[in-house]
Image (cartoon, rainbow, N blue to C red; front, side, top):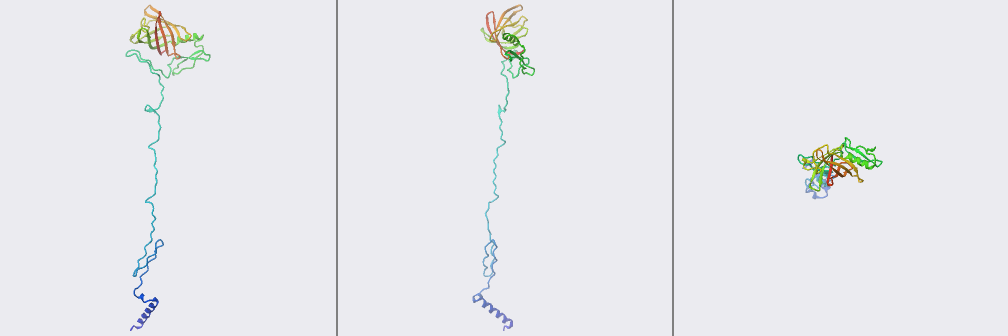
Length: 287
C-alpha cells in the first residue's frame, strides 16, 4: 500500500522516535532559540513554544551632570581706583599771596594800600648785614628780586652815621596811612611824600583833615624837613617846617622816627612847640 517511497518514510519516522527517548515529544514541534545577547547586555531569553523573540540589548547609563561644569568668578571694582587730593573743589595748589591791603579812602579819594606781595618793588632797598658786621643794602632789581648785599662803604663811618644815612635814604618816597592825636576821635587818613632834597607834601582825602593838625595841606616849597639825629635804639629825630601861608611857618619835630628793616613801614610822632603827639603810622606806596 505504501510502496517503496512509503516504506522509507515509515522507517525514518521510527528512527526519530527512538532517538527522542519518549513518546511525549510527539505532542509539539520545538520553536527557534532566542538570539544571544550582546556583550554589553544580558543573555537572550529563551524562545517561546513557537517562535522565541531575540533578547534585548543591555543598556548601561552613567548619570553625569546636566551640562558642562562651569565656574566663573567675577569680582571687579566699579571703576579705576583714583585718589585725588583736592582743595576747595579743584586740584590742590598752593598760592602765595600777600596780606590784605588797607581800605581805600572812598569815592574820589586815594586808593587803599595794596596787599604785601611775594616780590619786591623795583628800586626798593632793604638793609642787610655785611661780613664785617656793618649795615649794607640790597636793591630790588627789574625782575622784582633783590640783588646782592652791597657793603663797600654803603653808609660808611660809625654805626650812628650809618643809621642816620639809612633813615635819610629810607624815608624818601610816598607813604599812606593814618594820623591820630589826643584831640580828635577820628583818625586822619594821610598821604605824605618825602623827597630826597628835603621837601615834603602832605594831603588827606578831599582835604578832610589837616595832616599836621596845624597849618595847611596846600603845597609849598617852604615845606621842608631834615633828619638830624639818631638815638641808641636806632630811632631818628627830625625837624619839620609846618606851613601856614607864604612866609609863615612854625618849626616842629618828628620824634621816635622808626623805619622797618625792609624800609616799607614808617612811624613817628609829630610835635609843635610842645603840643602833641600826632602819631603817624604809614606804609610805603613807592620810592
